[in-house]
Image 1 (cartoon, rainbow, N blue to C red):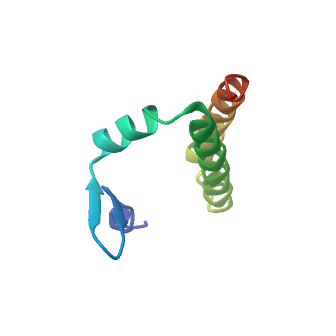
Image 2: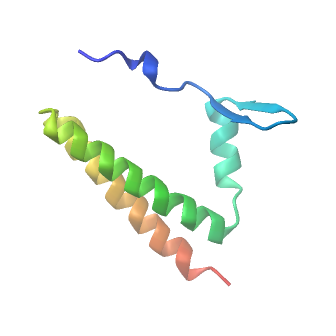
Image 3: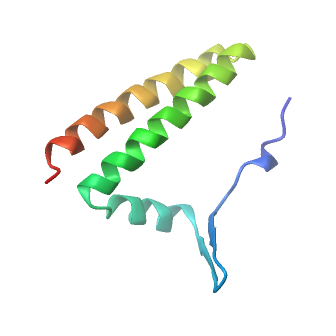
Length: 88
């Protein structure tokens, strides 16, 4: 069984000047507040990353997880297409 400690529990942005750490609630609010164009771009990238994870889990025999990740990716893709309609 894999160790989930390799996955992040907070979102960290590091620059030369500072480090910004967001908990999951802060990250969710930051994503929610993105402009439609930025949100659509983010959702598109997130959908692709989740689809890739689903493929890896499928290859490892984690069928149920792969299916749910694939479903999530599909719905995120739908949200992306809806956001795209509002871009100006």
